[in-house]
Length: 211
Ligand code: OGA
Ligand code: MN
Image (tube, rainbow, N blue to C red; front, side, top):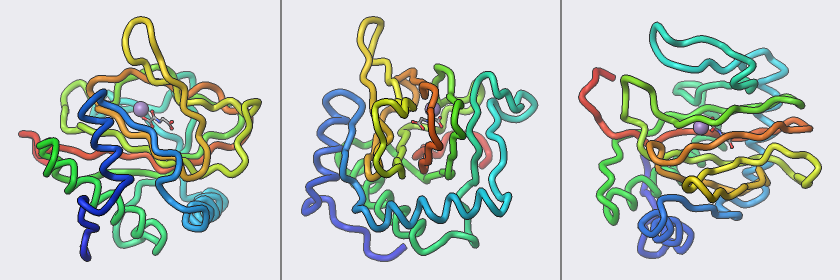
């Protein structure tokens, strides 16, 4: 990976790390500029048309299965060798965040796994935690939204539960990055009234399971 941006001169990353240290979650409404966001969205729609996305599953190993009544999104894992230039640039930005988080918060983040996600109109993802029953490597969730002109009537909010009494709602507006501790915050995607596109992923610790 080439020259990660040093965190000490990166205001956005510093703000995210401050938020994480204070409250365990952060929303940056301008993490990526409009052009790369539109490029990522265009590619995602193209991949969908080419039939490369698959209905997302829940669970892992023998427990893994597709349940549209739990989640209705379609996904494509971001993997070499098929990364696009725009995807690679976003992953490099995340790499800068990973290194800065390890330096300042000692999170021990070892790698990142992520996928494109498209929620067709009417779909949602019920309340859940981003950790598997038998694999606790997912430590920090990072979601980048790719939707231009998202309106309140479009629904599709990410609802992040802070505790018994409080939640925050995040609109999936293009360029917004939401980051939160994967093992701590229950969350859900409320029904989207129009197609809703994101890059969703997890920074993982090394754990003691084989990769
Ligand atoms: C997930 C998820 C939230 C969102 O994919 O695990 O919770 O806002 N996504 O897309
Ligand atoms: Mn989730």
